[in-house]
Each structure stands twice: as structure tokens, then as C-alpha cells.
Length: 94
Image (cartoon, rainbow, N blue to C red; front, side, top):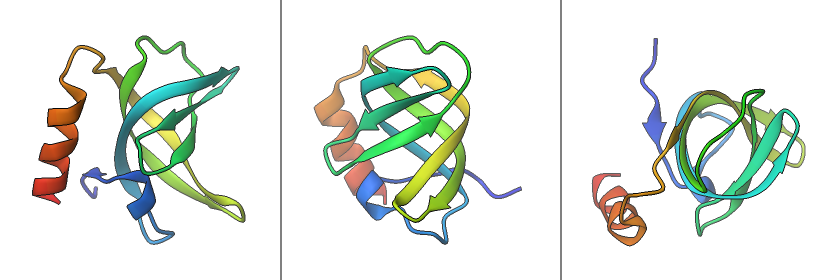
């Protein structure tokens, strides 16, 4: 199984399969939510309750005509981390 590669939303393409994205939860709906990572917004399909306002999502990308969505396998609450430092580290390791 391919590892989940962490990316910014703006970097996701139709060729990505197992992905990891993180961002602020800006909208919650039954069965899905939307995150914003500062580079873009993305719908995440997840049928369980999420905790926290800043999350890291591990899942599979789903190409749509309007863009890419993610079907989440794991949603991790990372609200207590330093968001600025976290994004700087993501920039360095990509």
C-alpha cells in the first residue's frame, strides 16, 4: 500500500491517491466537512464526528469535475500545535 504523502491543497493532482492534508475546519455538514490550509479549500468526506478546529486528514483522493475531494480514513485533531511552524516544516520537507 502506498504511503500517505502530505501535501498542500494547491499541490494535489488527479494522480495523487493516498494523501494527507491539514487545515482549519471552516464548514461542517452531515457526512463531510471543508478545510482551508491557506492555499485552498477542500471537501473531506467523513461520516464520523470530528473534534477540533485544525485537523490532519489521511485518506484517498477522489477526482471530480470541480476538483479533488478526499475520502478520509483518519482525522486527527492537531488544534494545539503551532500552525505557523507546522506549515513551515511542511514547506521544508516537500
